Image 1 (cartoon, rainbow, N blue to C red):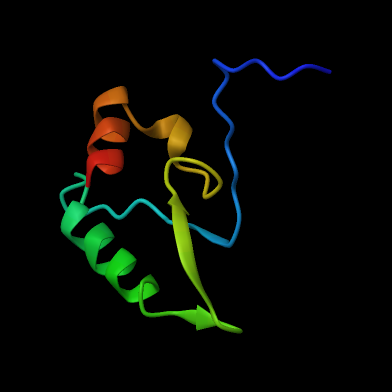
Image 2 (image 1 turned 180 degrees about the vertical axis):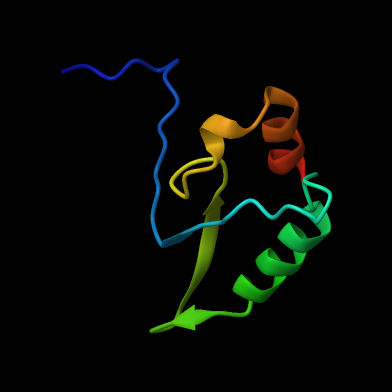
Length: 77
């Protein structure tokens, strides 16, 4: 197998936290709560490893129900 020099390699390691999508009482995205949750995870260490990334709009089940605009808003938050 030869390596294509134009191909970007992705190396994923460490702790990747799946984050839930917070909504307010009005049913709209609550990005301020998302930022608060991420700030809390930033303080977590497990056996000397900190959180290396976050997975939004993925494994927590609500992604199919979000609009494209909501997904973009979450990623930018």
